Image (tube, rainbow, N blue to C red; front, side, top):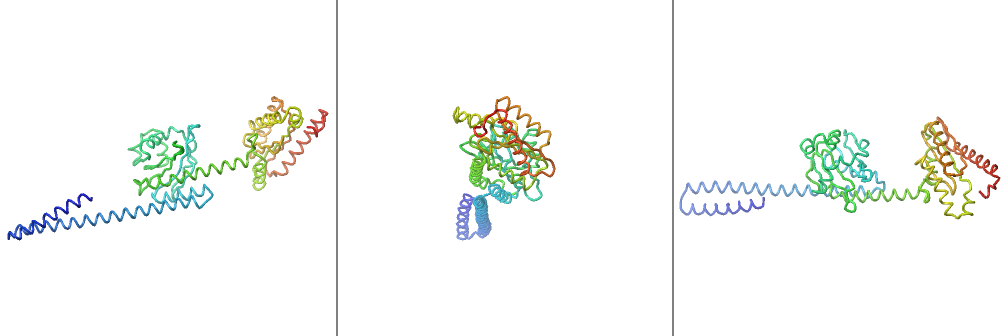
Length: 385
């Protein structure tokens, strides 16, 4: 544009000189012709100048709009300690900027060879797809990863033209009614760990500046989420066995006291002989004893397992049938016996109108009765257990 204006100005100067020469030579016809050409050139020059000014104004307005949107995104992430809420506000702002159907993040699990939709905002009238896009095979985003590495961004202007029909990528996007898409990678330690994308943008879809700028702040927020999760794990995880600890146990009790599940199975386990083992063989042997017991409980009950004291464990199983819970208890007893781990056990299962506090007391009573029986049969002093 600038080069064209310079050329026209030179032509305009030349024609003005020609007009002066025509007047000097008293050539009336030539004078009229030159005047018309000069006028046309002047009008063209004026229109181009106006067009240039208008384009500059539009570009300035767009940059201001983009900057304002970026500030809104940063504010959304900075003002709210709730990472999920902050991400929702950010994705809403991005969706509005592009007048798009959705904005979202995907994170990659290279070990599990999958990727999952972790955050999503959908415009009014647009269905959310996040629940359908969990643990998607990583090869479905191969074309994304290749373009990220090659160009640093990903852009589909038309699904039918840009993506191979029949491919997993095409099928997933078509299922969501996605025809156009823009995305930028999420990078941590020089590794692509996911991407930030927008479905069916109707405006600004050639502008990656907002996505690229917001990208940095999204990564900060994801790292904040991970730090928070680590702190939560430390708060709720037993240091030795990695089972849930008493803090988590108490939280679960409160949860089910306020909202009882349809059925509830609870159990207590108390190791027999830990003190004697510590006294005779040292605390290292005692720790191994605890770890062996913990591993069998985790093997059978998974995330429903808790270490609630030095030699005490518990399980809380919600919405589990009596048959399944009883079967698991029998399986646990078998594993304990096979591993020569002596444990006093008490458990309770209730369906319908259950009360977790009452069930835990019942299980505790059964466990102490089992403990008394063990010491009566062994002839040992419970205080030296």
